[in-house]
Image 1 (cartoon, rainbow, N blue to C red):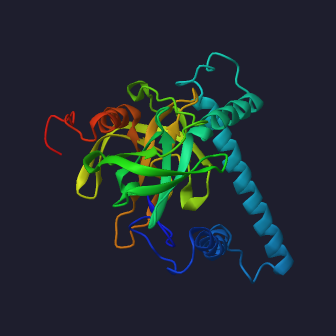
Image 2: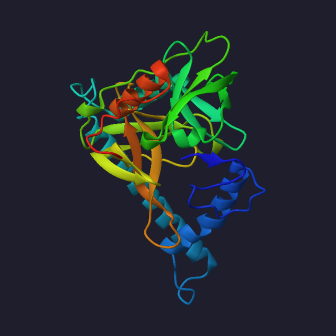
Amino acid sequence: MRVPRGQLGTRHDRTCSPDAGPIDRSLRTIRATAPLGVQRFVQPSRARHGPRRRAALRFRIVVRRECVAAVWLLAVLLTCLHCGSASSTTTITADSLDSLVTSVVRDVDPSVVFIQTSTGLGSGEIYNGQGDIVTNAHVVGNATSFRVTLSDSRQLAATLVAAYAPDDIAVIRVTGSTAGLKPATFGDSSKLQVGQMVLAIGNPLGLQGSVTSGVVSAVGRQVSEGSTTLPDAIQTSAAINPGNSGGALVDLDKQVIGIPTLAALTIGAAGAQAPGIGFAISSNRARFIADQLVKSGVVTNTGRTTAG
């Protein structure tokens, strides 16, 4: 999802004042929602417990809840390593899992960039050694010039190569020297398995180099995005927030297997983001479109059997 400058939330959910920047507005949201989250789980009776008793009870319940969540997450991650990882044949421990995940992030993060336009921001990944960067078309919008920030804080100028809205893919190109750019390694998304662990790396709310984790929830989804339909989307439980769009969904083999694009919204007028349901364009589909944009600037073969 592309984040408009000075606005927080998805393109469908803008609830904070327009004069606050992305980070300030996220802090306001945390302050506003955190107390409600605690009260939802802890509602001791005032008649039976004094202030100290209520505080102690609240602390114990919250700590137990966090411990249960941590144990559950560790179990999920250990289970996921049996799918799609070169290290699945070895004995997995908490320490080895931690080392594996940090190694993936350390190697992939330099290939993920922070893209800014005059009206918004998003993510992208370095596509090749010629300075091409693949991202979402909705991150590019109507812009033709961009500021690209690398993981080492270097800032480069870039211009638009081409965008293809039906698949929400765009390519921009760094102007000037491309020395030191590290292209991402793209994997074969057709080999993904449901339950496989993945990491989403990007710049949600402008927080550069953020990482979230989850699993592949489903593959081959057809997902509506505005007036178009993405034909080969990966559903994931890894959190995808505004600003993650165009970034990298990677497996534990350090390969980009998807481009995070959007999150599901709940049904109803509020249209709040549904937790744990995000979608990424498959790497095979992204490469199929991006290769054509890099070569000729247009898509002459959509790869679709019907118009869409």
